[in-house]
Length: 160
Ligand SMILES: [Fe+2]
Ligand SMILES: [Fe+2]
Image 1 (cartoon, rainbow, N blue to C red):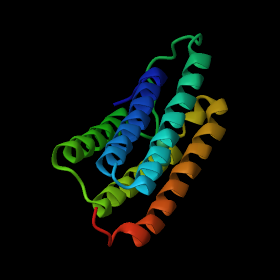
Image 2 (image 1 turned 90 degrees about the vertical axis):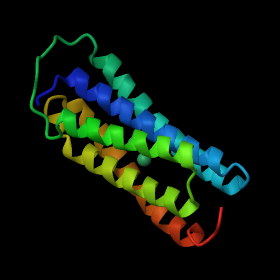
Image 3 (image 1 turned 60 degrees about the vertical axis):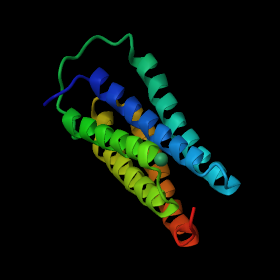
Image 4 (image 1 turned 30 degrees about the vertical axis):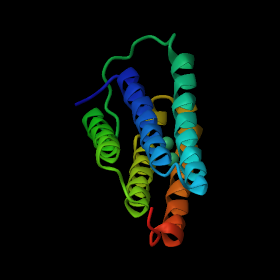
């Protein structure tokens, strides 16, 4: 399914905010361990910042004439599926709780997947001014993923 750039950006913002919400659930879940609250709140803020960056671009583009549907390298359906998966992970963690090992694993999957989407969408083919932003977000999400891998080594054995 082809999408308009407005649809693509709306889903992108929703994904970043859903990731932030997931990390906030983790922060609450581990409220008794200050280092884990700090860790997850940092992650949540980073995703909120991504959402805000996309919003700034949305407002900058708001006056553009409608371009109709376009073919992007990431289909809107695929992005919406990822959004639904992140939401399901958050709801599951809220309902059933989550171990630190599982939380780190989920977050690693989220970061890996969103870095991959940022890298692949090639939104900058339509809007060249988006190139730097998407590259930066992909790099940040990859850095988040790598940090999670080392956090797994540090904390995954611990009970929480
Ligand atoms: Fe992100
Ligand atoms: Fe991230």
